[in-house]
Image (cartoon, rainbow, N blue to C red; front, side, top):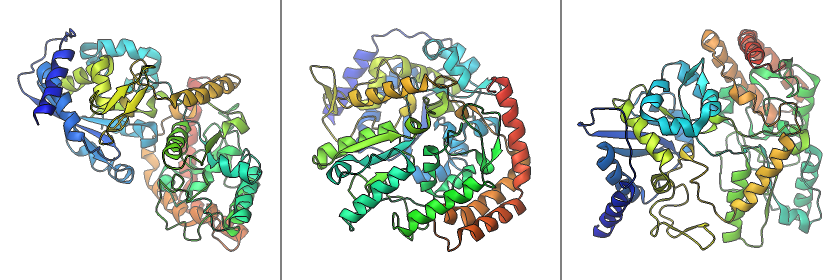
Length: 506
């Protein structure tokens, strides 16, 4: 215990050397802030929080209690529990309905707080980043400050591709040949581990493998718009009907072909997602929810546990030509309207994201205990009880402070390649889709009914687990129409047209 206190004391002495001046605020009452983040808590949560709070208590008469939730629990509780739980700060993202939660009144407007208590942070963000976080003109979150490509793609076992002389999985046809080649060479090897997905709640897909649509179509939305609509990246305002097209029926037949060939389990619709299946060798590829960072994570895992394995990655945009960086609202921090201490929240957020020592403490733990820097300045973990970004606070990343790992060289090479490809598009490196926020208040009942139909009828189609695809397609179309599809489409398309006109995406 004395050793831990000495760490905290040393940090207080080190960090208090910086001079911070804020507008007058009554800080006589201690503020015990609750900060909701995603993922599991690190073993040394209490140790690192003690070190952080020793500084925050000294400077702001405040403490932070990081509250963790698994990915599944976070998605389930986010709207119903966390936002109304009387917390103070929360991780937000466009893929967690940031815009809708902002318009519903869950988050505080931040412009005045930022001007008064976060001038340094405002300057660091820049108006461009902040404007991308605005909803109907108001600012509701502070974005992470690390430019990142999260281009969807396929992560696959390159060592097996080379061993069996198989094609690179650059297209749907090549992915099929790759999987069949491994199946023929080693029938006992697991291939894909897709599952029924809660993404039906976002009115896009119902089965993980449908993410592969992003490898076939040059859509502005990576795997289609809600309600079975679509638009090409080059002409985003020209929306067309995918669910009632011949392409949709043919895609469903492809998925059935893959299911019949045994690419995934016949119980996939009831399987729970195994996030470690690929890293443990139970699958040879992952096609859903992948991004360059997840590829690097698997490469690190292989290097540590299976040095004879090799993981590789192909972004779908390398095939379609549609590639761009993540939106500013991909990782952000909001102050909940329920917070009793919004001023203190902004002060501390400003401090964490503008002070290098504090940012590193939050992200990496205690230097000398949890990590060290080598002669080349690379991060090396010393204690698994607090790993790299152990609090899962991707929303607090700052490019200038982010400690680099040796594998970041490979990640940056991927980012550089994608940036070059993205620069060749009609809208150079512009993430059009993620800047849009749909307000479905007026048709929420129809939207919920459509989502239920998707879970019941679309997911089996996309999983290939139907006996007659044509009949199942017609049944899905009839059911989703009866559920109120047209009301959803009309409301969505009106908003999308206004958005495209506002930003001249024609």
